[in-house]
Length: 276
Length: 280
Image (cartoon, rainbow over all chains, first blue to last red; front, top):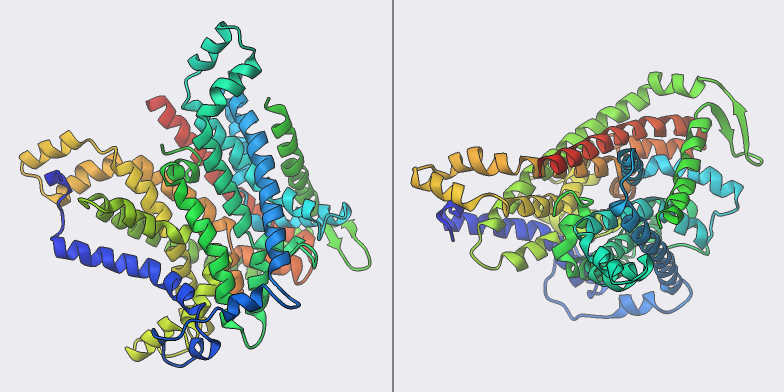
């Protein structure tokens, strides 16, 4: 350790870090832990750490009339499709944008970034009207389009940033050796882009999977996603906490793992390439 | 290669963009089929005179300053702490990052679960220690503090992650030289560390500023603007106008005022990027 990094007494530093870790992790751990408690213990007046774990909440979630399966398949289908489209088109456009030299490129970039930053509440209003005209309410396509409205500009922008880091000499060398432009892209550039592609895909999927506002407005009985399932249970009188916490655990765990898998490129992804 | 993506993007962003502008000059009715009647500047006049809208912008401003301010502050401290660790920093930052992957709906759910007056863990702790014994999400003031802290809980890690990336670029030899010249930590922080990460801090600030007005699901699911409209930030107000009162023309006008804000942020962001490009 360089002396420069030493700034607080060791114990104070550890105490502060412990506090921050507790603040961050206690709600998550308490949720996961409580999802294995019987409802009588969850709603007891004093918190309990010791109990006989039960899988009843997960069991009821995946059986019976109103099971979680349709919500889960809707979420996977909608988030998956919008991610796939965003990444494929974003990758192509990103390569083009990174290599091209045109006047007004800056304005193009500004347009792309401002569509990504548009407030969801403001986007919902015209989309709702358009979807009504086009009979896209309560359809998978409608929600896929809605998610593309933020995932596509995000993917274009981020892939451009990843391509910017790759010197064009590589594909130029391949083209001198006789490869077509497409071959150079597919055989030389694309394999080097794996981290960029995976990071973009995972972040697009998380954004779509986590969305609530669009799904709440555009989905119907046939297209509701998991966050909607959670919201519905939450607005009922006499909340079934066990079931809700089980849903919460199911929504959170896969995304946390996926996000941490691309931790190395996360800064770049979440700052839209502004920080490397 | 760019055209398919750009054509699709134009289709799904420009069409809604021109629609929202057109809608804002119309009275849009959903009753008995969809109909639009041109109403001139009616909606716009309301946007600038409606006291409810003004109140919501004010609440948004408080919410914005409190969340972004706390996130920048705690996030920077978090990053400095993790940066100063000799080992284990990788696992610790991973653990600290988890909240930002969590769906806002679930953050709201967690908030309601932890703060539930009859069995929430945090409510119980506050009650036992005598700090607060009311219904946290049901009282004016404490509800606002609670939704602010939920946002802070979710997004502080993002700031920490960005700042941490900036800290690795602080010139070590300059720090060592300052050390030899007898600088203490406060001096090094103020004169070397903070200046060299100022650009990064600005990036973090802009990213958070943009998202602060983008998302509203946490409040939607916990207080839905209540009690007594005390947490009704502008997106929640807009959603109410559009989908509770079905006044879509008016909602469109409110939406455009929000768009103006995000366009300003986007503009600052691209300018900053350009400056960094020119500098390097």
